[in-house]
Length: 436
Image (cartoon, rainbow, N blue to C red; front, side, top):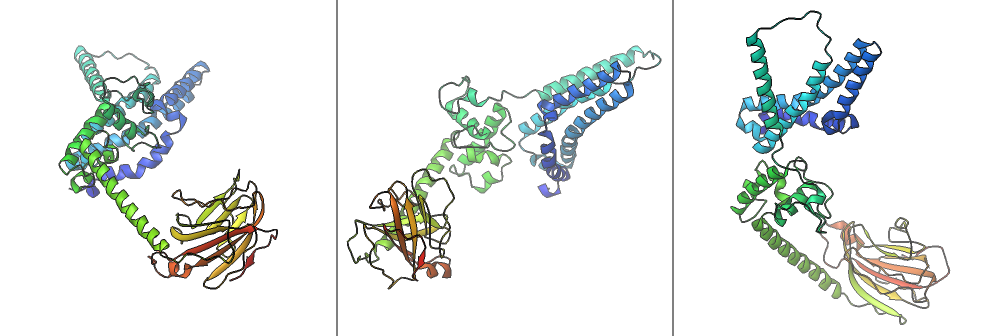
C-alpha cells in the first residue's frame, strides 16, 4: 500500500491549511480556552436574564465548533489505521502520532463537558440500578485514565531561554547535553540565523524529538552520515535531517567534508575566472589617471554598485541599460542577472580623451558625490579604490562595455566575456551622453 491510496491522509492534507488558519484566531488559542470561556459566559448570561434557550444555543455552538476542529484528525487517522500500518506511517513517527492523538482526545474533553453542563434539567428523576451506575462509573474512569495517559506529553518542551539557544549561559535545562540542546534549538527555530522551526516538529516535546533524531542519526550512520542517501530520504522523520548536525557526529563530519569540497570548487571556479580577466590586455590611458585598478567583480542582480554617505534610495535607473546614477549612488551593468565582469576603473582630475574604438557601448552620466568617497563594490566583497579624485562635488562617469552580446547569445558565455572600463572625472554637465 502506498501513501497515495491512504484516504485519511489525503483528506487531512486538503483541510490542514484552512484549519490551521482558523486555529490561529484568538478564540482557538490555548486549546480553545477563550472559546470555552465565551461559551460559558453566554450561557450564564442567558440563565441570569431568563433567556435559557439563547444561552444554550450559543454555548453549544462554541462547543460544537471546537469538536469540529478536533474530531476530523482523529477520525481520519483511525480510518488510515484500518487501511493498514503503512498508511499510519504517512502521519509521522509512532511516538509523535500517539502524542497528537492524545492531545486531540485531551482537547475534546472541555467542549463535551460544556455540552453536558448546559443541558436543560430533566423534569423527572429516573432512578438507575446499582449495576447501571457502577458500569457508568467504571466506563467514565477508564475513559478518563486513557485520555490522561494518551494526552500527557511524553516529556517537556523546553523554551528558547531554557535551552540557552543564544549561548549566553542563561539556560536552565541541565539534563541535556549541549549537542541535544543545539539540535532542539534548530528544530524549534531558536538557533541564530534560523527564522522558522521544522514544520510539524517545532512544537513536539523534547523527548520525542530527541528519540526520533537519534533514530535518524543511526540510519544516517549506516550510510556514512549522508542525509541525502535514499534510505534516509524515505524515512518518516526525514524532516529532522537538516538539523541533525549537532546531534549526530557522522552527519556533522559528512557536512563538513561536503562544505570543504564545495569551497574548493568555488575557489577553483573564481580563480579560473580571475585568470581569464587577467589575460585581457591592460588599458593604456591617453593621459595619466590618479588611480587605475583592475578586478574581477561579481553580481547576482545584474549590476555592481557604489554607495556614498547616507543614501537610502533604490538603485538608480540605467541609461541604455548600462549606467545610472543618483546623488550618492552609482550602478553599472555587469552581467545577465548573475555573473561577473572584468572591470578596470580609472580616476582623473580632468576629463580624459574620448575612446570608442574597440568598445561596443560607451555611455556617460553625471554623478554628484556628497562625500568624495565613491567606490564600487560587488556581491563578494571586492571593492575598487576611491573613484572621486577631487573630493565632494560634481563628476562625470564614462562607462565602456564590450561582450554583452556574448552573454546573451549562449547560456554559458566564454570566460572573461564582459569587459568594463569605468572613467570618473570632474564635470558639471548634468545630461547623459550616449557615444556608442
